[in-house]
Length: 272
Image 1: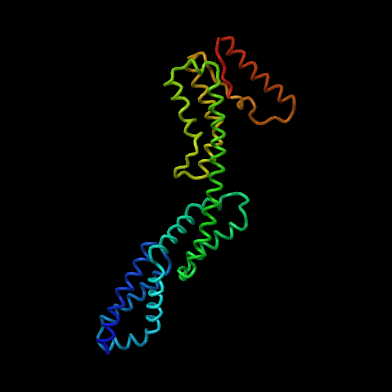
Image 2: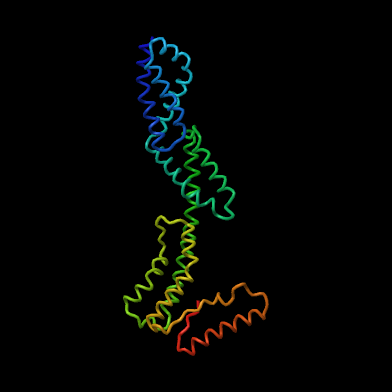
């Protein structure tokens, strides 16, 4: 009896090990239970005859469940199913992680994200593959919609920035290499590229368009005017905010005086 038990367990162990390795390799749940079954099989096979028979009798139910689970997993973790799971895992880590940070995220999408995480985390995940694929597809589509919208906003912002730059007085007087160097960063951000950057970074680039435009304009003036150009940051004259018309008039007067001093020195002022 012990010999027959060992022979049967030896045949089952290889399949158990293969499925366990598959779960570990693809970061799927349930590997701990199969690992426990593997250790049990090795213990039963390596003991004395009496131990083998006794251990098999006492642990038969646990082994039976493990073998059945391994069989179901082997049937449901072929290449097509693994591809679906890998896409779903990527969607959870990337798209859903971003969507969770979105303000006023649609309640249905919130429920989709939580459901996907839940199903991917269950030992019975292989029974929910169609639903996992559906949920992941819905979240990925929502992510791509938001991404395209933000990229479009960035493109519009930098298209306008290029227009402001290229219509500056003196722009056409620069050499082509100088124009290309100054406009290069704006040109790149005026395209619809996304690469692997996050939506938050795309938004940050969009919001920086005014600053980058002023920086580019300053470079143009510096090339045209040299040391004659000085920059004044207008915000420094309004620190602390404005609450009354008197405060507004006072701040404007200080700004006017600063400008007048530079003008008297023959400078050209670039307000930022």
